[in-house]
Image (tube, rainbow, N blue to C red; front, side, top):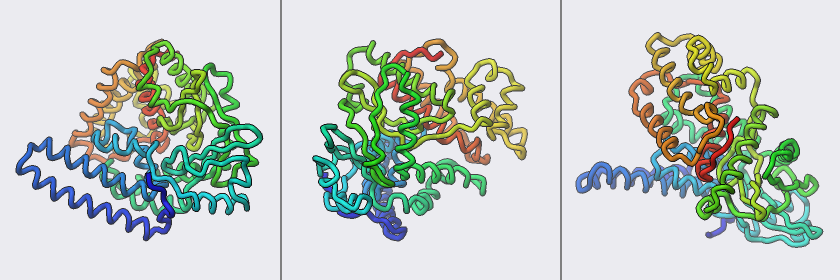
Length: 430
């Protein structure tokens, strides 16, 4: 893959890139209308989705940073976007053009006043992985094999302008209305800003990995603050395979269950004991080590769970609260799903919708053991998303529903469920 010598960093340059992408998308729609004359609507729409997904991803991967991170987040939302988009956007977890060697050296010199070959005994100039916010290189020092994560230049300074560009599309996609929608964008901006603070990530990585070391079958790298900076992180290199590669090849169901249990226990402990959680559970952040443990290699996105959200949110995973109408309604209001200005019609619609969704979403908590390898469960999740996605009421009513904390908590759970499904894991959920 060709490396990049520079990344557009100014608001104008990044907007210009997206305008070019928009021109390509416009051309795809012209082709779509032509294809409708000779192909079925389904075939023409599928071709349009594939072309648009390819062109949009091509534009975003040149920008890197927040714009590409949003695509990565959407790749996990299989019930929202057509498969062509989620498949293409999933590449942002692994397949992004790396920075050139010259730009890497420049970044090192800016933060350490020396070049990587002076700081380490050995430094591999070619990256081993390039993703949305940074890329990883191998290095050695004092006999230790290291992973060095380097943030792309300009990423931290372009978050606000990137979100301003993405915002109109998100508003239309999710039918957000009014000034209250701003709280969701501010939440995303806050989390993305935190993800670009590599010193904060090192601190959190050390704290959470230490707190979770008692959990069986987990592996964490050691972090080196003295070899890290605002935009560079140095940690131990964990030998192993990306979890996606492991899942494709694994034939040992007992091992899949063991790793799935470790993953489940890791998340449950964080949520209920630490009240903060690794909120970016996409496959690129996990590896299966050579000794068959689950390695967690990225703590960039951590969601702290406030008590006034924690209590009603997790109560709704329990049947006793889910099926008690008075308690259920009370928690929907605490979680800002039902609003003071709702009409009776809106109350009835959203109460019914969220009861159905939360009942299905909370199913793993309703049993002592749950089989995430059961494809029918995930088919139900997708079908329910499609069912309500087609409801005219959602386009008519104000869709600003739910606390801002839902954004990253729901993202965490759907990512966790998908990873457990890929592992085909049966886990003890209590």
